[in-house]
Image (spheres, helix red, strand yellow):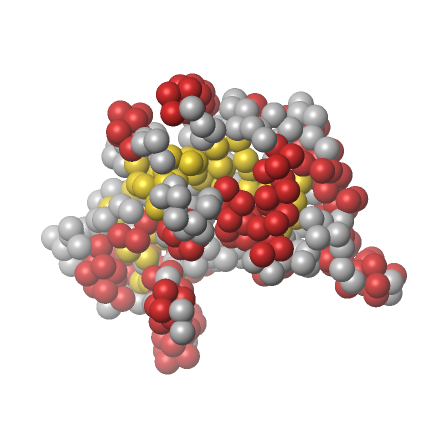
Length: 396
């Protein structure tokens, strides 16, 4: 066996481990008695236009078109529809050939690391805490090292003094995720401007390209009019966008997303070819064709975000009232909460006594915190609040 792969298989992510524990408890005591905040699985219905499009496509009964292979990099019409949507939103000039359609953001990230990193070159990828734990898996399996830059502990924005200390001549890329999983923080425009300037300085200092990779499955999930998510290609030429429709359209199981390689990026034609080659080497012939045809017709649609905003406000206001310290989330659908003891794993075990299933953030690079995914029913949140109150009282 490949021992690294065997180890990954025997040690599933903490998120999945807690989710499976929740399945066991639901079978034992009933789903209504388990308050599961583990998995970021959207529970807002898909937009009506998505349901309508699926129905119309299936009714047409053109099986070769619906279920057959597309081009390896994705159906041209789908890629052009995505380009047109982004151009209308951001004033860009993307073409279909700037896009490579993938099986969601996870595939996008793994492919781009495969395209950029030559094994054994001692490449490094910097990311900011807290971060999605699978980043480490994706980066290391491509043959690079993941380097953590500690975010500002008060705001969870970029700490530029810490970031500057993390660069080395081996830095190949910086990876950002905004809105952030697990904190819900959105990187402000001034942070992106300053980050772009710093990357340009480091490119000159080291004499090679440093790509800015942005992981954007939550791009549309922001809840306040005063908050915007900067589109990174407008700020830094060597930017690469990895996107998923999983959250914006509430269809994570359909596994559909894309990689965007702008023409302005360094060595863009060769980079795009490397993306195609990495997808080929990893066994991706094409992303699911039916989902591609749906996206072609539904790109730009978004699920009802007011539902998440209602959940966020209800949970955040109640927990802070009970004495918990929480990062205010501007986007995504996660609440990042400080554990009531230094050991977040021990705190999560204590929470299980009240049937509260929370994820310790040690694997997210931020010990002492826990993540709550509030993409659950509002009723579940309301029923769980007495348990949170009892948990807080047990520490007094």
